[in-house]
Length: 259
Image (cartoon, rainbow, N blue to C red; front, side, top):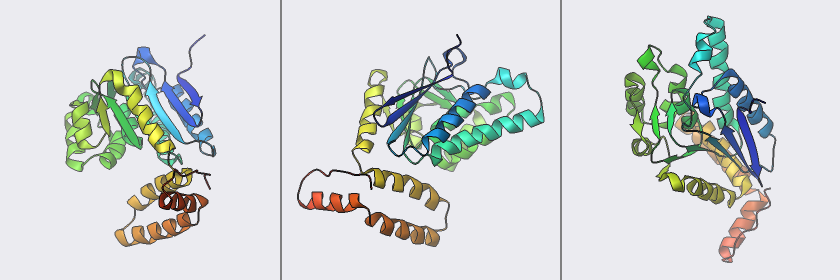
C-alpha cells in the first residue's frame, strides 16, 4: 500500500497536517496539493477547531513543487492549473478561521518557503534553511513572491527572490518569516507552547482577530479604522468579553464559552 501523502491527526481541538513524502523532500505534487486543499476546505466549518499545525516527515520541511512531475507535463495549461491550485491552498491557510502554525525543520525552498510565509505563525528548528531558489534554474518564483512579500520587508524578499540564496533560521526570524527559532530537540515543545497559548484565549477573540487582521491589511488607513471599529463593537457584544472583563476585575481565570 502506498502511504498517504498527507497525514491528518487531531488532538482535542488541534489538527496537525503532516506532509508525508519524505523521499521527495515533501515536494508539493498534484496529489499533495489536492489533499491539502480538501482538508483545509473541510476544516473551515469546524467550530470546535482551535488551531492547525503544518508539519513534515523526513529530512526537509518542503522542497517546493515537484519538478519531476512538472517536467513530465510540459504544457502551459497544466502549469496554469497547477499554480492556481497551489494558490488556492495558500489562500486556504489564510482563510481558515483559526491560526495556522508552521513547524519547520530542514529546508523550506520555493513553494515550501511560500508555505511557511502563508502560515500565520512559524516556529523553526535552528538547523532550518529557507530559499526561493527558482531563479537558479531560470524560473522566477512568482507565486512564492506573493506570500513572501507579505511576510517580510520588500528589500529582504527581493534579495531572496533575485539571488536564490539560502538564509538561516536566525535570518528568517530577523526578517519576520518565522516567529521563533529553537534547537531541534525543543521544536515540538515550542510549537505546543504556542498552541497552548492560543487555545487558552477566547475562541471568539481568536477567530474574530484572524479574519480582521487580514481584511484590514488590504484597506486604506481610514477604511481599516472604520472596519476595525465595527468589528470591535461587534466583538464587545460576545459573552466571552463580558466573562473576560469580569474575570479580570475579580482576579480569577475566565471560563470561555466561545460565544
